[in-house]
Length: 361
Image (cartoon, rainbow, N blue to C red; front, top):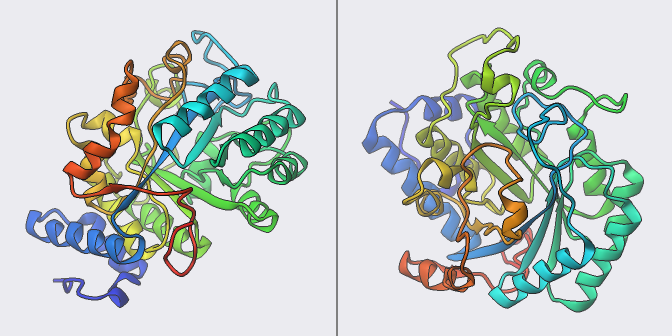
């Protein structure tokens, strides 16, 4: 039997140890895992939960990823792009709710002009104290540089799986360019962004060994932000319909369960103790009663309330039946502090950026 983690040096798990934990099913052993991950979280990033206001600025996408409802081949979705003023109104809402960051997310949409978005970023930075995070897919280095120079602080680009064969199968190239997200993450780091990435848990074709490699990759990349969520199928995608040629799985298929996602989240905290790690909307979609709370209890320190206007939010359907912190009432956004205090946590102050001494900015 593997020894119980007892100190911070044990968090430096090798791939074999990670693989053992991923396969662990004993509830008592898993309680030890949750407790250790929570202790690492408390020691390195404290009890603050940083709140990031998520704004889904466009659901257009040029890509045909096999898992995403925004894929360009999905003709059944009504497409939208938010105006500049609508985005700025959302940023003002984030300030009003006490959030430290606004996160602008979209499909890979080249209808979002780089100079236009740079102007929006400058307005947000001039008019608010917010950090600006972008999650806009694989854009040219010139766009990424322009947005950084305009004041963007962070960029999220999930590599989804470190299994190159599986990745190429579910994430085809676009615009004649080979998709290499690891190269883009390195470019983002050189430009001075805080960089974030992450994976889906339980993608069809994913084995335990590749998932263990994903967690090892988080550590190797020294990521500032890490998103871990379960794969949730969309009926208008090849993976959701089951009409795709999955690569042969050299090992047992990873389940896309809530429990497996908690294991990955906890292990991610153990190997990346300083990172900002959200308790994701996808977890809350699997368990609306307490998914976010359990994520926070098992290593997470970030929540990303959705502040996209309701008329657009329902159209940003990466997967169906997405859970959101309050759908209608601003009171539920302003009530986040009370909810956090009730579970023994507190809302973060300031922008909540990572610093490598474990403090926050």
